[in-house]
Image (spheres, rainbow, N blue to C red):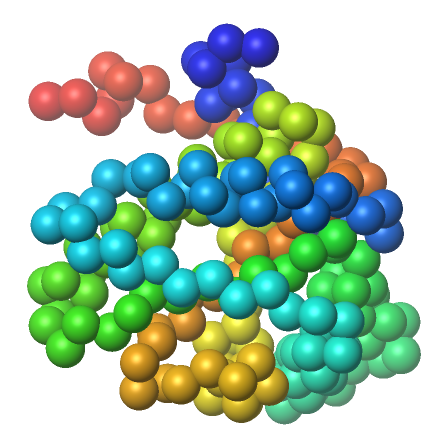
Length: 181
């Protein structure tokens, strides 16, 4: 697959099988993600692999937070738990806090580029991903569950990695003529 084909073919995966993805591929994708654009070479990335016990607690938190908005039946709760437990890996992603709003904005852009690179590396090998920013992924309790200092790190979500159970069709994109001025 050419780079152009890879970019156009990659999809955000919403549902994952429980099939395990090789750890070396996950590490390769994360390592290559560190080659993203990075203004002033701040190297702001923070990645934390959440183990099964941590993911169970994150699932409980996600269900708790969504239940506060509206009552959830058992099927919805089970589906939410499956959505977080099935992917082979869940990696909390964030940036090191700099104390400067402009630098933090640039560092977030670096993280976004990194997530794209990791997702493309995984997709090339037949592995799906989703960068989620659901409420639980950046909640104060998540810092506690994962043992992360909120004074040092700004969580920006989680990267779910796994084998897709369904690949969605491509969304309609604007043409360059609609964007370019």
